[in-house]
Image 1 (cartoon, rainbow, N blue to C red):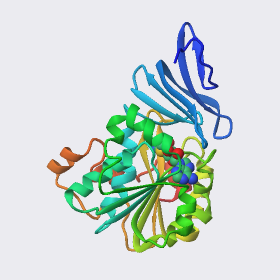
Image 2 (image 1 turned 90 degrees about the horizontal axis):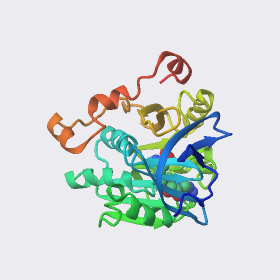
Image 3 (image 1 turned 90 degrees about the vertical axis):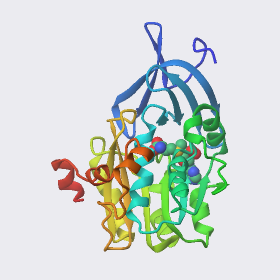
Image 4 (image 1 turned 45 degrees about the vertical axis):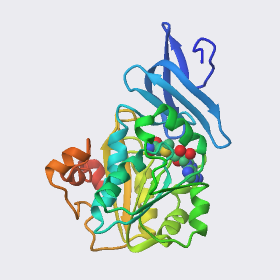
Length: 303
Ligand code: SAM
């Protein structure tokens, strides 16, 4: 795609350089995160969303849905590892895992590590947009390398709809969705927490990306946690360093109905040599520290 003639509302030219700017008048008015573009790799409008993939100058290839960055090759491991290993390592015996969304397949890559160790036995992923999976396979090969692993049951459907009709129960449900503007709108409501609850074993754990972080919108997060607490007895907020997300951090809401579960410290720990072999971001200390919030945020969120 020729950058000279390509028109997109997130792309700007300045001094003969092309920039992608992540902007949102609803979520973060008055600020933008920018990455310099080397080349546009792909652009399309699928039935669900605007999909843009570009090569950036120093964050590798970048996947953008509806103008919002989903992942970059440079820092994707931080998010993928935390959203996967927090619930898996907090559960005594996680066998059956459901992923809602997750089209870049990075969470699957992380889950396969637990399949290979012999803990996780089956992974079901329900992604609404098969274009995201196809394009990630091509342009984000390191993330999507296990999309057709024999333990992965891939369902192309609306995650909300799937949860309404499924009779299956899962040990872990990971909601790796995009932000509320677009097809993921319903994931941030009490009705969704109810559906998660119904599809979860009594000892099960759910985790979802919070779409905001403590710098952007603390009252939104407080409200999201409040919604989760109407359904789950034990709800905590974790965060990871993500330079490519606006404001540099991303929050995760983790919940279970088991009050005895210490979500904030791992129930199972790998020895340091295995951690070093498997992970780039996660270890048992990172698990614990991800729940430690700065004073002003702790006062509001009461982790
Ligand atoms: N790590 C990312 C983030 O937090 O920005 C999310 C990554 S993943 C690409 C998000 C996926 O959720 C997308 O592929 C999108 O198509 C999918 N998605 C959005 N709404 C959905 C729905 N209702 N059901 C299933 N998948 C959905």
